[in-house]
Each structure stands twice: as C-alpha cells, then as structure tokens.
Image (cartoon, rainbow, N blue to C red; front, side):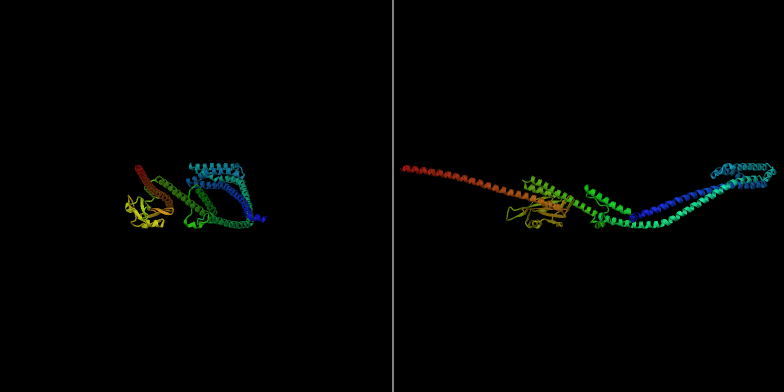
Length: 519
C-alpha cells in the first residue's frame, strides 16, 4: 500500500518536503536579512551619531585655527570658514536631539554642550568684532584665554554618556547577526542533507512521469492523426498544449463540418485538407466525412438532374397532348422544345415514310435553327449517310469531330461548326420510327441522353399512334366509299329487278290476253 502510494504520489511527497525545507530556510533567511537590515540601519545610525558628535570637537579645532589665522594675517577668508562652521553647528545639534532618543538616551544631555558652544561662539564673535574695530590686542587676549578647553571638557562628559551606549548597541547587533547567521547555516546544512536526496528522487520520479506523459501524448497525437485528421505537419510532442490543441481543433472541425452538412451546406470544406495529405486521410474521420459529402453532393446532383429530366418529360407530354391532331405541328413543337430544353443550337426530326413499301425512306418533318442549306433535300434513304446508318443500326450516334461541311451554327456573330452532333433513334416496339439530330457547342451529358431516350419513347409512340390513326382513317374512308358504291349498285339492281318484274307482268298479261282471244 505504501509502495503504491509512493509510486503514485512519491514525487509530490518529495516536492512537498523540499518545498517545506525551502520555506523554512526562506523564513530563516528572511529573518537573517531583516536582522541584517536592522543591524545595518543600527550600525549606520550609531556611526552617524558618532560622526555628528565628532564634528563638534573637530569644528572646535577648526574654529580655533581659523580665528588664530585671521588675527595673524587679517584675511577675511578665515572668518568665512568660521561662519560656515558656526551655521553647521545648529543642524548637528538638532540631528543629535532627534537621534539620541532612538538609542535610549535623552536629548537633555545635550543642553550643557549646546550652552557651552553658544557661549564659545559669542566670545569668538566678540574677538572678530574687536579685531575689525582695530582692537587687535583685546581680540588676541580672548583667543589666548583658550575657552576651547572648557568646551572640550564638556564634550568629554557628553562622550562619556553617549559612547558606552553606542558600543553596547553595536555589540548587541553583532551578537544577533552572529546568532542568525549560525541558525541560517544550520538550516542550510539540513536543507542540503535532506533536500539533495529528496530532490534527486523527485527529479527521477518526474523524469519517469515525463516519459510516461511523452508516451501518452505521442499516442494521443498518433490517434488524432489516425482517427480524425492528419495535416502531415510535424508536431513537437513535448509541447503538450500543441498536441491537445491539435486534437481539439480536429474535433471542432468535425463538429462544424457535420453541422454544415446537416444544414444543407454541401460545399463545406475541411480546413487543411489538400491533395498533399489526401492519401493519408482516406481512412479517418475527415476522409469519411468528405466521402460522405461528395456522395451527398452526387446524390443531390442526380436528384436535381432526375428532376430536370422528369420536368422536361412532363412539359414534353403537354406539348404532345396539345398537338395530337396535327402531325406536322407536333413534329415542329417537339423539336423546338427539345433543342431549347437541352440548351442546344440546332435540331431536326426525320420520320420513317413507309407509305410505299417498295420505297421506304426518312422524311424531314421539322427542323429548328438549321441553316436551310443543310437540308436541301428532305429525303434520306435507308443506309444513306450518318442518319441512314443510325436507322439501320438502331443505336444512338455521338460525334465530337463533326465533318467540316456537314453543318454550321449561324448567329449574329457569324458561322461556327458545332463541337457535338447527336443522332438518336426513336423506337416504338423496338422499331425505329423517327430520328432526331441535335447539334450543339457542348456534348450532351448522360442526363440529357436519358431525357432524349425517354422523350423518344413518348414521341415515337405519339408518331406511331398518329400514323396508325391516319392509316385507319384512310381505310375507313376507303371502306365508306366502297359502301357507298355497293349501296348505289344495290339500288340500281333493285330498280332493274322492278323493271324486270314489270316487264314480266306485262308479258304475262299479254300472254293471258292472247290466250283469251284464242279461246
């Protein structure tokens, strides 16, 4: 149990111990630093107090020398030095008045020193005034009286009060510094003895953990590329954010792609998918989604084209229904509709003419937008040219290399040879009854050909029906004529019989009359 705990949380425990030791050492170091700062500030304060106190006696010496020089040579520059020292004395005394209470001394111990200095300055001022007024002997007498000795004695008494305090404070500060230094070194040793092995263990544990993390992220990146999308771009496995971001981005791309498909956007693209990485993404989610999108696009296109074919057949049925009674108009309307619906440029319809069984041929019944020179003759014999061959074979013909002088498409911009020519047979009960010829600048696609095939069934059935009706009408008219002739002959025979009977009756009467006369 402990082993499992250490396996799972050993690095954390080791790091916690190291952190605790570091925090303890930091606290000691902080205390040491604070003590150092306090010690330094105290030392500085004590040094400053001692220095300011020392300026009193050094100023006294400087004043004595300056005034002696002034009285000897009369140079006012010496008086300037004196005045400067005199004015500096007050700030020095003010500083000491504020600083002494900070080290436990009362500012009142400076009163004697301050009074003595003021008295000394008054005597020196008097000496200067006497000298300036021409009384050099009296001025020199004041200097010789050596009033500085009294000031010196007062200074010695002040030092006896201040110097021991400063020395004690300095000693205490040094002792505190030494104590904290010893404590800090002790904790530094403890930190080294305990921290180094613990840190080594933590580092090794972290290395093992890092290795496992690298292995995990390698697997994540590999699964991301294998299952979702592979951009074919290298990723720094040690950059965990990049690996996780790459997987999240791919999942977001999948979500956005699926939402777009669900909303009917079949033009959606997978960001980053290109020809360069298409092969390696054939079997993952991105490839499957793109295949699904393309399949849906194809089915949608097929549905639209099938709808286009159905709509065209319905419209063609209306054209046929509206023109059933007039064969010529029917042919014209159907050709015109088919050419326009296919976005072609020209079209013509040839119908089988078998009125004379010994001379069957194809007759041009209608043409749309054809140059009249193309069809100088409206008759095509069976087996003659491309039209006659298509009739014999019964199979559509698709020509993309149209002969030079076969047909031209004429517009306001001039003439141009079509790039595609389609000849399609219209069959009824597997018998070719008509041919349609379509000329266009672009080849007809499979849907257009399907439309032609289905349209041909309706048109051929209608043509056959009209032709059958026409033949039936002709036979009916011939039958009616024959009936009329029979009725006329019957009436004539009846009249002849009546005349014959009348003649026979007349002959019988004459015969009877002759017999009566003879009797």
